[in-house]
Amino acid sequence: MRSLCRRPLPRELVLPLRFIKWYGTSVTLGAKSQETLEDGPQHRTDRHLLVADDKNILVYNVEDAQWQATVKGAAGNTGKIAHVDFGYTPDEVFVLPEFGVKATIWSLPSGRRVEIRDPKILQKAYDYRPATGHLAILTRPNTHDILLVLTPDTYEPIIDIELSTTDAQGLKWSPDGRWLAVWDTASAGSKVLIYTADGQLFKTFLGAKENNAVELGVKSVEWNPLSGSVVIGDFGENVTILSTTFSEITLFKHRSTVSSPEAIVWQEEINAAKDRSYTIARQPTISPTYEPFPLNGMDSSGISALDFNMDGTLLSTKSDTMPSTIWIWSLKTTKLAAVMIHHAPVKSIHWHFSIHDLLLIHCATSEPTVHIWRESWDFPQILRPEANDLGGKLKASWLGTEGDVLRLMLSGTSKCAIGQMTVQGQQIPWQEEHDGNNEISGLGPEDMFDEGNSFDLSPVKLCDGHTQDDLLDKVEDTFQYRNQNRILT
Image 1 (tube, rainbow, N blue to C red):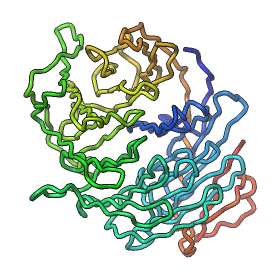
Image 2: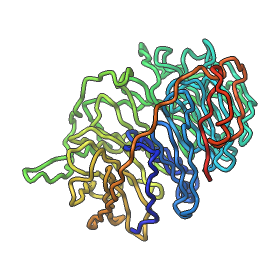
Image 3: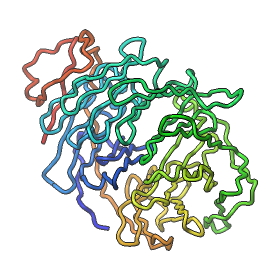
Image 4: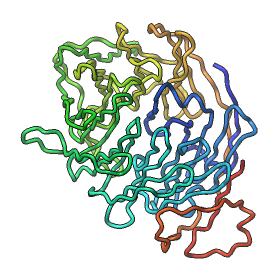
């Protein structure tokens, strides 16, 4: 494993960083990662890296030491950055501020920006259409949710729909771009709207058809990457599988007492020497449960993770009332294939991007540890680096493969460890990578908040890019965003 580049961070950035993202992925510090894969690992074809703190963004090309883009005060005068990611291309950056006045799409080559008024401040409130790059975004300018679909590059509105939702919580394009799913708040029941690409309402799903069932609302939605079917996780313990015509096929129930003859239940054990291993649990077995509690004002119960493998034949799920357990379902048989019960809550799960039945599980253990499951192995594997102190909160992710050697990374705030194993499950000694220390000073005084273009009724605004020097001669206006953004290329 060789280092591609080392870049000292500028003094404008405040450590610790809040966001580190590769183009083509959605990896946020403190949140799980989800990779979008179609016809192979797309995120490996580009080398653009985004890092950001509360206000400033830097974008690097790791294969071109001379290329760098900087966006200062990326959220303007509307508070801190709540969410940031690449746009449809690595030349664009999408920013959501914490107060929700506007979303901003920055063009890195030109310094121009597009502003979208009144976006819903949800990480799942926008999505780019595969293949074409049309942006679908949820806004709420008044008492109703609005679905906007904007053209690529120019971001001109071509679809403007008032939704029948109470408080829409997210949207997602299908992998083929033919459908758009929008789901409502839990208080409205299990309501999911399916739209065609041209904005026509095709179907409304109102929950699984069970006698006397109480609908607890939609918590998560995911599309099968190949078949085009959709799965819906609720705030109870159920996952509903819909067909390609959006009719219910089956219901996956997550019960604390596991009794499924066709599934293998793997239970983690720790011996006196603190060595970890998996054993096959006798059924019926009980998965540890926890009383759900509100987190950041949100109910922590329900199905919080829905992750398909690369070919859409396996689905991994996690229920927040059983946070140390991962369920693996076969979409070929619509049966439970395996259950993984751990000693600590699961932080993240990641399917491998080229091996369809290989799953990485990262738990909140006291020492650096990763768990690996593969359907063809006799036993799952547990990997631990020799160094126990990687610093700070740990993140686990897959890296590339070389021949029959798999690589993964376990990273902290000061250094990372590179794990290796063969595709047959044989472990190889870890490698350690150290980072130098960077002393970063804080930013200057925070921008004052003002109401901005509250009198401009257009939902989308196109602005020219300016350097900081261009603004010195301008008179500040209380009813204008004071543009303190600049792009350096």
